[in-house]
Amino acid sequence: MEQVYQHFRKEEQPFIDMVESWVVQVQQQYAPYLTDFLDPRQQYIIEMVIGKRGEVRTQFYGGYEAAERKRALIYPDYFQPKLEDFELLLIEVNYPEKFTTLSHGQILGTLVGSGLRREMFGDIMSDGVRWQFYVSESVRDYVLSQVTKVGKTTVRLEQKEYTDLLVPTDDWAVEHDTVSSLRIDTLISSVYNISRQRAKELVSGGKVKLNWAIYDRPDFELGLRDILSIRGYGRIQLREIEGKSKKDKWRIEIGVLRK
Image (tube, rainbow, N blue to C red; front, side, top):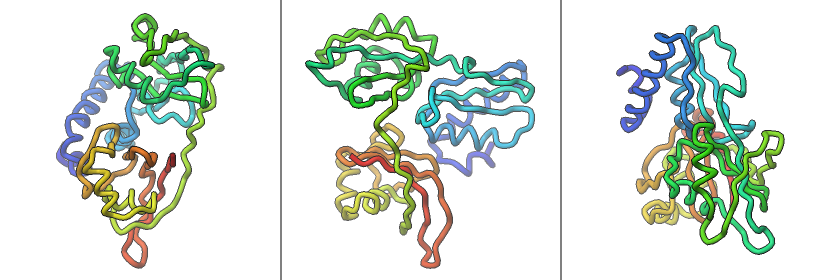
């Protein structure tokens, strides 16, 4: 395991151990294992840990092609995965659209506040008016019965067919950049064209999340698939590290959402 650990952060070791246990379970039981919803960094770790093991494979699905949070199916090489194996349900939030508006943060807070673990539901999507999200089949009844309000707004959750999936308005722009380092403050400064000092203040002020958790170290270096959420600015995902330039700077491909 030490050879695997050295490619990742120390705090990621417990998740790596968990992935290894899933692989062993699949090998011993000759049956697929379905994970909860994973963020892109966790998906990347699974890809790297399982690698090219011939006897075990993995596939990800989050309900639609561009999904950010996905479930992983780890399975023996003879198994042929189907979409229904991912056990996803699409839920729509019905509310009085003429009289109020909802936000991503409100819906996320409501679901977590209802006692639902973040790993049990996927992307929260909107076309500007309608709101939908994916959940695991196992929590369907719980979600439908427990969530009746978002903030002060009375809502009714309804299960929908995948053909009713709305087209999300959030579209990642793929950009290429050259940066002196992969530090959090360096990327924020470069992408949003603000000073390094301002970027540091955003991080130290608790306005930046790394993979959905507040992170206060501006000098932390990002890894592949990491996602930064910067309050008031948008989000950045490190998608590819393309190598060094002649001036010894990193050439990178990033996904960017600008507010």
